[in-house]
Length: 80
Length: 415
Ligand SMILES: Cc1ncc(COP(=O)(O)O)c(C=O)c1O
Image (tube, rainbow over all chains, first blue to last red; front, side, top):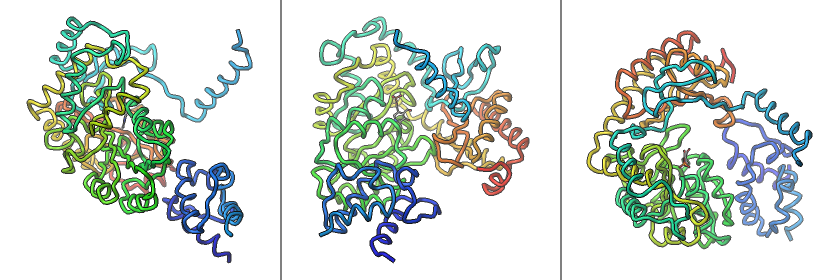
């Protein structure tokens, strides 16, 4: 199991899921209404702090944040 | 004309879609003044029906209070009908400044600026005082007008789970590097009738050096021992940096709103808030009416005390009837029905019984949380509430929901 996937999934559940919705690494987060686009900022800040990276605003699009797997792919572009 | 058949067809399709989804809103025409007893034409064209209104924001029964009506008449005579100008050109009268000073005193703040509405106050305040170096951290259930204000502001935005103080603290830590942090909440939440934990929020804002903004639209005039609002109720008078509130609910019911708080912040709004700069302010007769409302409420707590008693009676009556209500002590009392169609059916049947109360369902409230939102007023007498309880018992019996649990209601009617 990929550690980054699990860390991000755990954060998303803790932060956004208020009922018992099941989440997979491919569940649509923003288009699926789990994360509203407003709240994306804390996810972005969490990733930046956790992985010591800086994601440019124009890369932090709703599409790029739409599933745990997509977020992992985005983060990997910036981790040295 | 460029309004082509295709364009017309596009809009018709959207509107039809709303109707089919049960989301189409229809107005009901009230032929009388706003009060506990009203005369309603519904559906359109139907003969007038006398009903008891239990869904107005007329918390203190001021909408048709004779002294307020008289003051508005006098204001009309002495100060005219309108100003034909925004405030800073030639639209400020002595009574506007008087009202601002009275609101400051009533809310226990440093200064106040009037807006055409509280929607405008919320739309204008964040952009006027925050920049892209700052962050706004809002409760996830704040009112739509606050969401719009947040959207118009360039500061970063984040949210915390409804009334979850641990989550708020995490967010304050996460954003501690920002120039200014502004925590944003409603004082009383309009859909659930619950109250923000302002004492705890003030403590957190002091600890993390953050501003606190509270929308007091559903609290001003009646929450707290002398009706000053949620900040009085929570023992934090004088500690809220930004209060917005409306004169369209407890404080008269006509229209208008304000930002009240730290004097520099109010001055920033006077210099920069767009709905203040580019829209006419409150009309003179309405200003005169609100001044009278504040005089009445400052002289005596009778009306808010009566509202408190009515609210207790109403909450107790609904519980004894076996209905499920949201816990709390505010005059906003949601009767939970969970299923959207059930909420609409109960509302219609209540209307047949002479009780005017509206069903709320998704997307206004979460899926599976449909309800009838009842709102109690100091304008209600016990006989009004008794009649309304009788109707709730009768309709509740018809749908067999009295004494039933949430689980049982959902099993029978679905989410
Ligand atoms: C919490 C809250 N804020 C603001 C408003 C808007 O008030 P106004 O009618 O003054 O624009 C409302 C009214 O619905 C409200 O419920």
